[in-house]
Length: 115
Length: 112
Image (cartoon, rainbow over all chains, first blue to last red; front, side, top):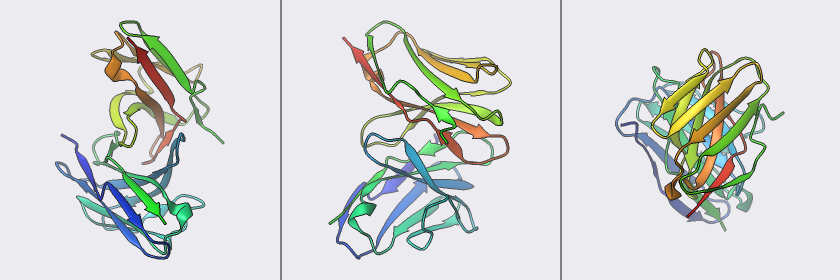
């Protein structure tokens, strides 16, 4: 149980284009989903928290107009990187939790490379 | 302000011996602590957790100890196996909050 998937697992896009990453909870309903970013050999950096049907709460320093988050259902959240630049290249990971547990369950991550 | 610290970036242990990973925190409002394991290019996998009202939680080869007075927790893995080689993150949650605060991670290598 508690499986979270992400799609795509890796994506290459050109600078200036937008790319959408999907995060799905496969066997549970996720009241809350989180988006993280990880740079090489560094810890997980929380970007935003989203509750189903509500606007996402972004961490300080994260541009909400650049990283668009939608959590339209209890099993799906999307992160859209708009007008991507090479510095947006990173490993993006989502996680999800139900309203009944403390644990977050993570997806496998998406490697984004902007050329 | 690093509220959760894993001061050892790496640890090497012989197969079959005990691995002890440490984590220190500064925020006394943390009420729940978790350990995650991460392989390269994959998402973290939940291992074990502990509430602040407890001082020990055990699950198979994994045991987490919490010392609230010292603001310190540790993860014990015994016996260590080659498949345990990964990066381990400790995380903590502020009471009433949704998000987790992660440490920097410790890379564990199990040598045969």
